Amino acid sequence: MPSPAFLSARAGHWTGDGTGVTVILPPPGTVGSGEVRGGAPATREFDLLDPVRLVDRVDAVVLSGGSAFGLAAADGVARLLRERGDGFPTPLGPVPVVVGMSLFDGSVATTPPGASSGEAALLDALSDSAEPFPTGRVGAGTGAHTGKWRSRTDPGGVGIAYGRVGPASVVVIVAVNAWGDVITQAEPTVSAADMLTPDVPFGRGNTTIAVVLTDARLSKSDCFLLAQSGHTGFARAIHPAHSRYDGDAVVALATGELPTPAADKGGGTVPASERGGARVPASELGSGSVPASERGGARVPASELGSGSVPTSEQGGAKVPASKQGGGTAPAPNPGSGAVQVDLDLLRAVTAEVTADAIRSAVRSD
Image 1: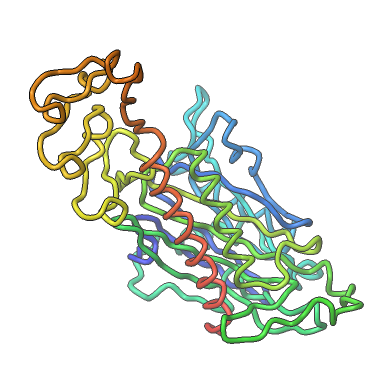
Image 2: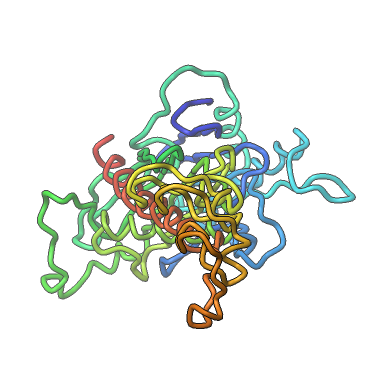
C-alpha cells in the first residue's frame, strides 16, 4: 500500500495463523546494504549486501515468520517482480534482488509462510488501499514475543517510527521477536546478574529484524554504516540484544531521491548548526574556496590558497608568497571528508534513535 510512512516505498502484509510476512518495496534505483549481529540468523541474499559485492540495488526486502522455512516467502516476491520486469538486468532477463530475513515463531512446527504468502504481501504493498499501515501483531510480527530469557512470552510485533535530519527523512520498520526484554528509559533494566540460569528451552525461538529507509543519496558503504546504527538502536531498546539465540539483522535502503550532504559529495550543504549560522553550499567547499561568512567578506579563490600565497585581503594589499610565510601552504578544503562525514554521522545517530522508537512501538501497538 502506498503511504507517506514509507517515503516513496511501498509496504504490505500477509497475516496467517500465528505467522506472517511483511514486504518492503523500494523505488527503482534504491541502494542497500545490511548487517547481521545475532548468533542465529535466517537470511536470504545477505552476501550481496556486502559493500564489496557487485550489485548495489535492492528490489525488495521480505520479513517473515517461520525461521528458515519462512524464507521461501521471498521466492514468491522474486517471481512476481520478474513478471513485472523488475530486477537486475542480465542478458537472459531481469533477476530481482530480494533480500529475506526471517524470525522464529510457532509456524516452524505447523505451516510456515511460503511463496504464495510472499506474493500476497507484495500484492498488498502494490494495492491502492488508503488504510493506515497496520502495526503490532500483524505480518511478520504475528507470532512474535519478547522476554523469553526470563521465561516470559510478552507480545512482540511490527513497529514503525520516523525521524528527520535536516531535509532527509528516516523510516524504520521492525519485527520484534527478541530473546530479551523491550525496555524504555522509564523502566528499570533487569540485571543479567540475577539471571543465573537463562531459560534455555525458549533460547532458540527469537530474532529481531528491521529495515531502515531513507531518501538520502547514499553509497552502499554508507548504507552499511546506517545498518550498523540500526543495531545501535537494538541495543538501546532491547536488553539483552544480539544474543547467540537471536538472529538480529538490519537492512538499510537509500532511495537517493533527496541529495543530502551525507551522500552527495559534490552537491548539498553543510548544516548551519555546525558553522554558526548561514548554510554553505558544498560547491564552495568543493571548489576550494573558503566561504565568505568565515572570512569576514570576500571569497578567496582556491588558486590563492593552493599556490601557497596568503590572500591579498589579509596582507593589506600585496600578495605574499608562502616562502616568506614560513614555507607552508594553505591546503584546500577536502569535500570528501570533514563536513560531509558529519552529516552522515548525524543521520546515523538519528537512525539509532528511530530504530529504538520503532522497537518500543511494536510492543505498544499490541
